Image 1 (cartoon, rainbow, N blue to C red):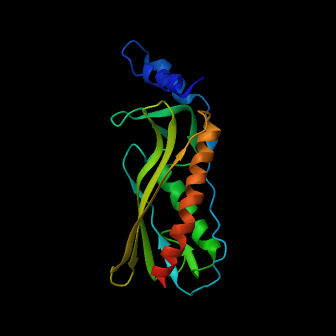
Image 2: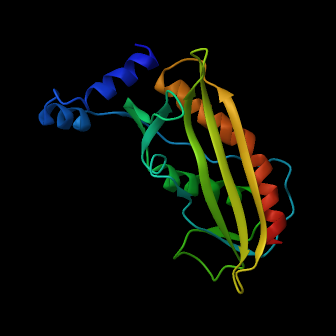
Length: 202
């Protein structure tokens, strides 16, 4: 089954002729679940005693869900009908960031709100793109774009803001292939982002 057909099937559920029971049955159907993994930052040995609080990222409503976003054109928003993320994209992204920064060994403590000591710095994240786009030639790409801002906690001074983005081709329309494309996007971006964050935290 092609991605185009899957999307068509999902859109059909919204037509007036479809019963509410049919929609509920589809919503209750089990979906394959995918979780993105933290990314290691090899070669980074400098470690500080600083502490960093990573807040939950902000994102548009279409992104802030556990569904895998598919855009057939700039104006349409649909989702893979038989697959989902293990958590909402902002929560999953926050977890990946915390684990990736912590495993880099460059910052003394990295955690989420409500955990750990009073932070020296706070990391804000805005996710601008996290989905699959259909190209004019019928192919698909995974698009990931996010902006990081580091604040000094004691006076909320902005220590730096930087955008990170990439677009990677998706080899086929299988859900596991699409999930691996997003993992590859993070593996391309986070090794750039982690040293940038560490340098601002100090």
